[in-house]
Image (cartoon, rainbow, N blue to C red):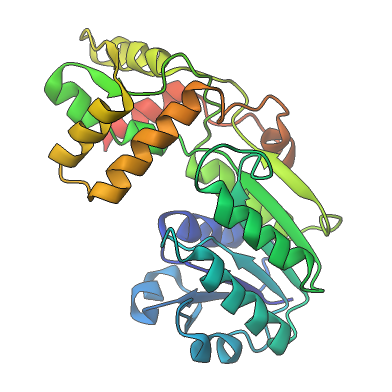
Amino acid sequence: MTIGITGATGQLGRLVVRSLQAKSGAEPIVALVRSPEKARELGVEARVFEYARPDTLAPALAGIDTLLLISSSEVGQREAQHRNVIEAAKTAGVKRIVYTSLLHADRSPISLGTEHRATEALLASSGIPATILRNGWYTENYTASIPPALANGAFVGSAGEGRLSLATRADYAEAAATVLTSEGHEGRTYELAGDDAVTLADLAAEISRQTGRDIPYRNLSQAEYAGILKQAGLPEMFAEGLAAWDVDASNDALFDHGRQLSKLIGRPTTPLADAVRAQLAA
């Protein structure tokens, strides 16, 4: 069985490749990427694969049995790009698709859910057996803000006291590798999230504990937080999106207590303290 990984040079994709390689008797892996030269360090076959260029897709999928479709990074264009991939998979005879969706995509208030719901519907009507991995937020989405928090003396956001069931990219990558290499997942939808929910105040307290500094959490309005992100150099649409998603998180949009992720990977998800420690050491 040959496994194709879209976006294999991305932050999640390369971790999935490493997780697959770590498994004994790993299946052949094909990295489906925009720039094969960037995949050279992965040590696997690489093929040109661009979501927005349908002519590259079906040829690149030749001989692929199982496809991991990692959602496109181009918000607003995902539905069309994912449709291109699914149609190409049908043409190429791909036998199974595993798709990285959003936690509780069927009911999530987070705006990203719209394109994920559309993609899940496309998969359901494609005739190709599929598995949906509804990934929660990466812990790194928040720990990446530790350096500016230390520089400015506070961790800021708009998530209030919302419960965040965070897990690291490595946790989600391991779950994907497990589903790609084992049986019984066709037709399943997994709600994947961290074992233990935290708040941004908890994150700030952990940063304080590990650094020996007082780093409080400052909850801001959506407009205030978006303004700070824009001042930091983020594009306007992305800054506005991040602030809005944080407000959704304040209403527990990123909370889940089903522990399906730790059940899939056979271990507890990575604790917040470990993720903070890794960021501080980076």
